[in-house]
Length: 107
Image (tube, rainbow, N blue to C red):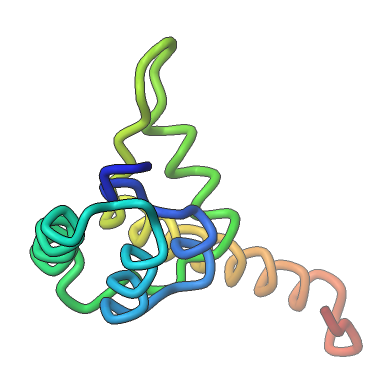
């Protein structure tokens, strides 16, 4: 975390712009040259920031990325794909409930 190479899970869940990510670096305990280096790395990895993914997609992404006893290398693109999967799953469940329970069903 002190190197500025860690993404806050709340930022993945709620989404964050690149500018806000860079501002978070300035509030840490990094030296100015390290802040610049970390900001360049963030610009390369997250050129448009991090899109909002939600809690469920983050959980699935963390579970699929973890291996016993090792650091978790979270891939934001995978989390975004899981977000799309969760959305499709929710729509399928909603469709099934609507057609099985009738028009009076409201989620």
